[in-house]
Length: 152
Image (cartoon, rainbow, N blue to C red; front, side, top):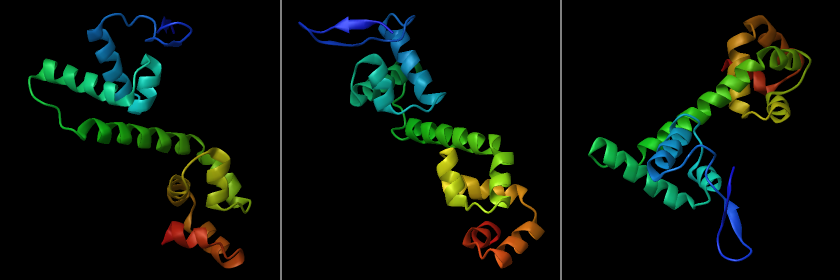
């Protein structure tokens, strides 16, 4: 990352290397927003601008390339879906560990905290992969409310 000088003694991060002109900058911002699901603030931090300026640059780029004004919430919804999909993929990558922890008595909330996942994602993985007999046995023997949430 390059560093731009702004006035005496101040510097802010410049755009990632390889991004030169305004068109390339707008394309890169759009790619970060749609493919990686980054927030406007995160993109702005990379380019040394505020989130509102990022939104303006992306909208202007979309208007120039499509010829019509962009749907105001479409990119936000798409970015949120991308982040959710990445979270679900992370949860599924830990399936064996989550099941092992659950079988050893850990609750869904504890597992969620350990792996940095939302409790709901952990419950979904357990619901999908734990068999019904295990869930019923655990519900009776441990009195785990998570099991009722998982199976209910």
